[in-house]
Image (cartoon, rainbow, N blue to C red; front, side, top):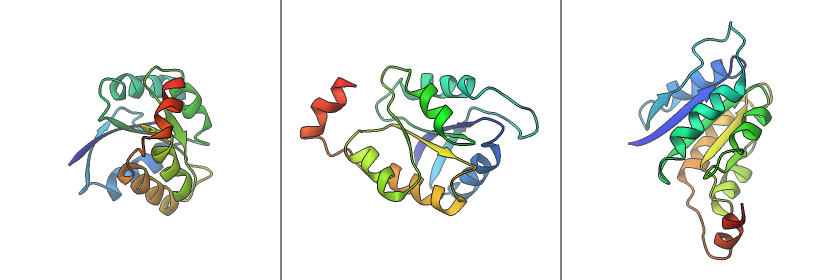
Length: 141
């Protein structure tokens, strides 16, 4: 089973828990927090924690969830070897992998319905990097 790092802030906590529950038979999750939706936390702390884990191997994937997905994406993309993609449709989840070799998907719990988030994750994880002409572009990131 594929191992996936997952983390959220307080706004993304409930969706994070639903993701783990939905995919429990398909993936092994390493949950890096937060542990509840009641206490306000700073999303960059959780993004940085996850990025340190994902950047250790090119086989690692991560899922970050906050209210909009934007904050987590911005914080994650500050790290070397990280290409975090804010996904809101199956098409952009696939393209983020095909063309950009993204290794982290970020989701907005306040903007993305649960079932769409599940489909995005499935597309993201199961889509392979196309390589070819995209390699030189990814290297420029």
